[in-house]
Length: 195
Image (cartoon, rainbow, N blue to C red; front, side, top):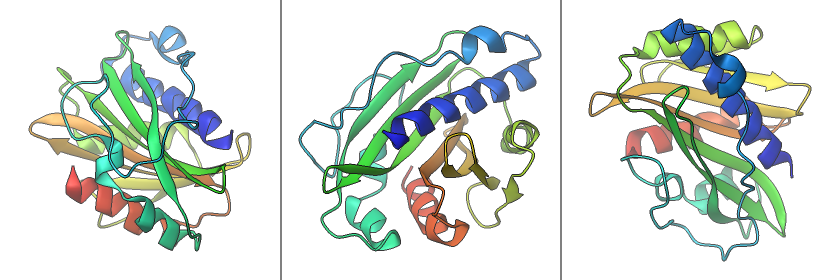
């Protein structure tokens, strides 16, 4: 379940973002992933019912399985709600959507809202870049975005920061390391524009 590891890895980066921006140094507890696993056996759908997190649209409603299938040249793509992670320590409330084809997970979209935080998108991107030294800036998505590949999880991630109704939000797609920045840009842009 590569997507499950990818979501957990991104949760650790989000914890780093929160610790860097708040200066509270509580990243040890914030980085612990929840024990909840993706609902990969759930019935496929292109939209999800509300579940946990605060406000905002559900990730499965932001990005269709057809769009992901087009990006990865895969037919029969489905989506299902993934883990919901509410972390009191860093204020991040994350919802995700897992994309699969033929019973194999091919990526996940995560949306993390920081209710009550006064983060700026530039600060969010700077903290992510500090956590991922090989991250590259990506223009034209949200108010700032980065792309990086991690060897430990063998995944690629494109994350964008924006303010939605005054709330700092990170939107990211994580997939196999073979997914290029060019493949991910339309996915994350679609999700950010729909958020």
